[in-house]
Amino acid sequence: MPTNTEDAEYRLYYWPMIQGRGEFVRLVLEDAGAAYTDVARLPEEEGGGVPSLVAFMQRDDLGTPVYAPPILQHGELYLSQTPAICAYLGERHGLAPDGDAKWRARHLQHTITDFVMEAHDTHHPIANSLHYEDQQAEALKRTAAFRSERLTKYFGYFERTLAQNTDAGGEWLVGAGCSHADLSLFQVVAGLDYAFPRTMAALRDDYPGIFALHDRVGRRPNIAGYLASERRIPFNELGIFRRYPELDAPA
Ligand SMILES: N[C@@H](CCC(=O)N[C@@H](CS)C(=O)NCC(=O)O)C(=O)O
Image (cartoon, rainbow, N blue to C red; front, side):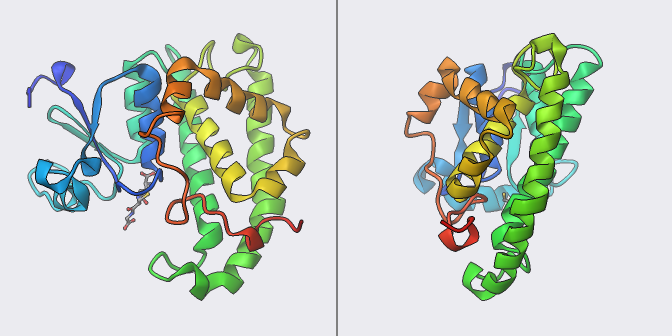
């Protein structure tokens, strides 16, 4: 492992069976065309698997221990917290605006982190340690409020943000081009489309900018290639965005 961070490879540590929060990091790496190793997806014999991730989280030699995955290792730099990792990579690879606007991309990235947490909590409103089935009654109530109040509030906010970004004619959230925040908003829309297809179909006409951004990101050549590859883990009921039809709007 080179000690010079500039030359070092990117090593992502994340749960190997889900897109989860690791996906926000993967999308920046993939769009940038950056080489990376998704360490826990390597076979255990090659130093991968869940044990590699658990061992990493237990390390006490990093200066500052990491709390939870995703974790990015870049030479001797170790970063956790999805928004910090996305901003770090975006700013290194031309996926962040210049100057002070980079801070606005970061604040958008943190807002997306909040949104993701609320989307997750729809199916796990009481405790992560409990199965969905053991908190289904609370999940039904929580998701009804999420769909009618929170989802529309976040979408309204991002729609306004797009409309006010005259630098990009309303195509990107901040600055003149695609940034890490846009890639992450793509992932949230994709995830919500998976989890709540009926709710999302009903919202399409009300938030045209957000859905157009989703489609625009999906057409970016490196992203389109990634989505069609085996590197893109399918959505599933272990991840953040889960399809439980009873939580979606009535048919
Ligand atoms: N705010 C953190 C949350 C990290 C997080 O919750 N990671 C999950 C996987 S997506 C985890 O394994 N958490 C373990 C825990 O919180 O105990 C981020 O955005 O990266």
